[in-house]
Amino acid sequence: MTESNPLQETIAVKADHLYKAFGRRPHEIVKKLKAGKSRADISSLGVAAVIDASFEVKKGEIFVVMGLSGSGKSTLIRMLNGLWDTTSGTVTVGGTDITGVSAKELRDIRRKSISMVFQHFALLPHRTVIDNVAYGLEIQGMGRAERLAKAQTIIDLVGLAGWADNLPSELSGGMQQRVGLGRALAADTDVLLMDEAFSALDPLIRREMQEQLIELQAALGKTIIFITHDLNEAMFLGDRIAVMRDGRIVQIGTPEEILTDPANDYVAQFVQDVDRARVLTAVSVMEPVRSVITKTAGPRAALHTMRDLQTSVTFVLNRDRSFAGIVRDRDVLKLVKAGETDLRGIIRDDATSVSPETALVDLVEPSVESELPIAVVDEKNRLLGVIPRVTLLAAIGNVSTNTGALPIVMPPATISVSQITEILGETADDTQIDAAGVHA
Ligand SMILES: Nc1ncnc2c1ncn2[C@@H]1O[C@H](COP(=O)(O)OP(=O)(O)OP(=O)(O)O)[C@@H](O)[C@H]1O
Ligand SMILES: [Mg+2]
Figure 1: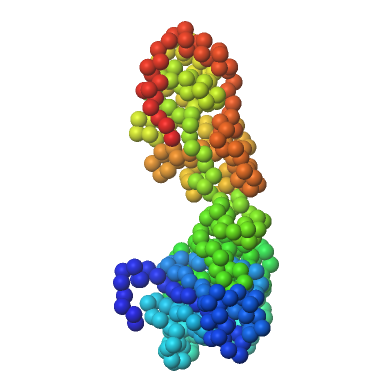
Figure 2: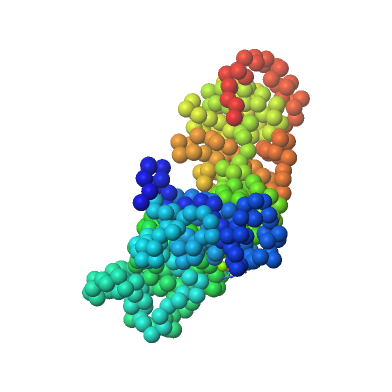
């Protein structure tokens, strides 16, 4: 065991400058790579499957490794559980450096700390579901009654209740993969490695499995390293994603970071087909709120704001800055004309408000139903930003909007500037404007 420090305890798996080269003299290949040679430069000597990969996976995180075929994903994951040794660099699992330990120690680590789910299930065909799930426990020497009881719990957990005594051949692909997952879960390791575990499944079953994996992860708190070449899968599952290209990790980030701020053209191209509406959340696309006043500011202040920004609505905040609703220019105009000083009677609550984490796909319906921008509010109902329909559509379609242009931020004014000025002028008293005092 290496010395533990508090920071390290939150790290489940750490890869430190990992290299894996295949060829007659792998160390020579790595030496050349470290000296700055490219993968192509050393191709006559062999294959540089993984080049200088470093990352830390936090406890309880789903860390996805994504990349095209041949980019080095499987090689990388096999070094993480010591199935393959590294040509250079170290792997730390649960605080233990697993590079250079004996074969026996490695078996212990694999049994206790890190288990693997494969693409092609790798079930034992002549054993029942429950015996497949219990297999690892049997190897560990657990008694029959105990291991079957434990296996039954896990069978229920992965949604296979009632199938314990069937053979794998009697199950669908999705169910077989549940058995594979169950077997890995039975081992009770902190870390699960999954290499294209859902790739052989048809799309609907695959989505079901992804959802179940997230549920299981939340319930059991496992650390999961998940390999896929499917971008939507990566975006759906990953807390963070490492993108690999030609043996190198070219970017590590949250799905949103990778979508909104790709490190290079390769990543940008990779992500262009992603289902953005499911990945992006309200907070990443919202606009600052410009047209906003406090409830106590009064109708004249509201009208001023709307005139200056040329919008037909303005957002209204309570004293504590929580979101109160919206007012419309026509209603405000009536109040001003009537000499009223209190806005409260015309505040409408028909603007939709959503939390910052709401996926864009869930904003489409409210956005279509009302021309009002959607309000994004935090857990204390404070207004964080607004999402006009055009911003939503632009984000989903991945086209840029001129977000500085006010007319697209809010519905355009329905009353002319000169008309408002005239009315404000008639009852001139501009001191209220400063009282509004709210700027996003
Ligand atoms: N045992 C091996 N001997 C020689 N070369 C290998 C070996 N295993 C992998 N490679 C090479 O290393 C590179 C990375 O392979 P790897 O299997 O890690 O890719 P991958 O990203 O998992 O691809 P896929 O999506 O197709 O599974 C490839 O060029 C591959 O040909
Ligand atoms: Mg692979």
